Image (cartoon, rainbow, N blue to C red):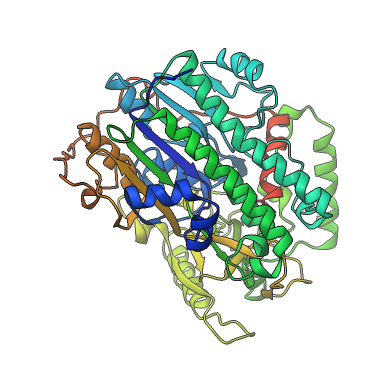
Amino acid sequence: MTLPKIKVLIIGIDGATWDNLDDYVLDNFMPTLKGLRNRGSSGILKSTFPAVTPAAWTTCTSGCEPQTHGLTDFQKYSFPDNLLKITNSTSVVVPSMWHYLGQQGYRVASLNVPFTYPAYSINGFMVSGLGCPGTGCDFTYPKDFKQTLLKNIPDYGIALGPEGINKRNNSFGGTEQEFTKTINRLGRRFENRLEVARLVQKENPVDIMMVQFQQLDLLQHLCWPYVYYKTRDQHPWHRDQVFALLKKLDDIIAELLQLIDLDNSLLIVASDHGFGPMKYNANINRFLTEWGYIKRAGTFNRMIRRTRRNLMNLQKPQNRLMTVDLKQPVNWKKTRAIALRRPIYGAVYLNVKGRQPGGCVNPGDEYNQLIAELKEKFLSVTNPHNGEKVFERVVSPKESWPHLDAPEEIFGDLMVAQKQGYRTNLTMKDSYPPIEATSADSLSASWHHPNGIHIIAGNNIRQNHQANARISDLVPTIYSWLGMDIPAEVDGSCITDVFNQPPKAKKLDTRNFPDSFTGAGSYEESEQEKQALAEQLKNLGYLE
């Protein structure tokens, strides 16, 4: 059966990097991807700051950087509630390209894109990706498409799906039989994405579609030595299993290409970030404890906190509020600074009077002096193993984006960014040193890198061309190719260098959001959904 052709197709491959998708892989296992590179323009795609899935994919579909769209991490710290909350699509304060494209009359489909849960109203179909608790919830728009999808694809899984992979009990490190079983399950998730794309075109065809594949990110988090180009040959059996999975992905991309006429369409392949080796953990809160900014709670206070938590667990789920003071074993009346999140960098929050319960830092001069003091200390940290500096960027969000109103809630009071090869952690345990070396043989000795990939091919696109870009540039490039104006809030720019004849892209001066965008909301997951999401993110190492 011939399905209607798509005008614009975007293929998202989470965590893809040209380091690991090198010439050997492209030549031998991914000829479709190699052919697209030759057919179009390709290069490095610079991720967001932070280079983390929720922020980057939201930038990919809005053209706005995280400081503009508002979604920076898997969690956000709410000052009024003193709670760490898992983020979702209602955290985004600007329209996505789906809103603008729908306003222009295009039918669209967003399939498996992370942090689109809860699925929202667009002129077409939305199937939520990572950040969705599972297929038991309403993970589609329209809602009744869920029934159609599961009837046609009964084993459909969202993002990581029910693979049962757990970083603390990693099946990638099990027997060859277990490894093969896991790889096959990941391959089945690839097939799910093709099946739902075809289903959409069969049910009610769309003009513009995005299909996202999450599983390469999982592979690099949990079996890095088998994927990394410098170490994979040391593990030939596992490497070949990974190569077979990459070939399956390439075969599925070839099938997706049957949905477009490349001579008259636009194709974009993109990743949200890259990956690189991780040699050391930088335990931010161990530094803050040693420097005296964190005061640990005494034994009696820890007993009281544990009792309060146990009593809370006896309450109804909707009444269970795991506030930061309950979660962290510190004396809040004497703790002046603490890292509460790690959206790739360490997000350090000051304990400010009038802003947080038990605040002890005065706003104004004392706050500013403490920020300057911490910046100097973090920038002077050296690694005792090799003498090199550990942190390369330590700034407040107000320094980076002075025009923003109160950015500290989503970024932290201080953003402590480590060098490549390091990962920030939040532990306070004395058994962990501030700088901790990791084993080169560790299956999870990797972390996000800002350099992702992109390929742009199709009508009016230069062939066999190299061009680097930012992930925020993709949406304005799509708008320009379609002859649309670029909305005022968009931070990216049209990548004019990839065109044979560059379009005349007009950037609007004032914001005029589509009526279909109802603004940021306050959707609150159920307790069961929160637990499912937290388990997903812990399994990947994003939450501790």
